[in-house]
Image (cartoon, rainbow over all chains, first blue to last red; front, side):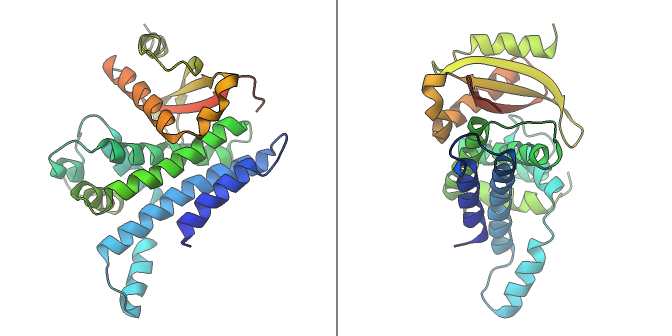
Length: 169
Length: 88
């Protein structure tokens, strides 16, 4: 199993681990795991798309590249692909067509989960309910499914490049 | 009319599914400092299992995005779901 699949499983496990009143610590970690599952899924696909090959040298290069993905840049790219209008993102403009519903959902999930992760890890005044967390975990699971239908397509490739490279307008 | 009022009005018109008990809209500043809105969707207690239905939740999120876009409010909607009567 990959790291992203394990994190997605962990998010689901933590959301339901307490039978009665759920502990905030478990719900918060579930939200965090859901976000990092999607983050690592996209980083994994982005790294493999940009650096292919199975030799040790290529693998080392790919691992180095994976460390270059930045949460802020990934969010900006997601905003550009989730927005109804193209804006000035060069990769979205280069697509020439509007992103599919599946890709818009992946991009929106990244934005939503990143915000939720920030609240879960830093906003102690915020209390999460199990229903809210269950919906966030399901959003990550749905994003995985949607990504499978987008991976390897021109729009999926454009999104992966945009996640790493700001580009010029 | 404030953005919250406009969005609230748009959501009332949007024909949300019958498992939605109510919606609540509030302004917020997200963690990168952008103004945004939080749309809290309260799910009917007897339909709580809907929070496990990714397709239904995605459809609802899209309706929220569309309703906000149609009234011309340029704020990202963070849509959250909670089940009626559920303690946080």
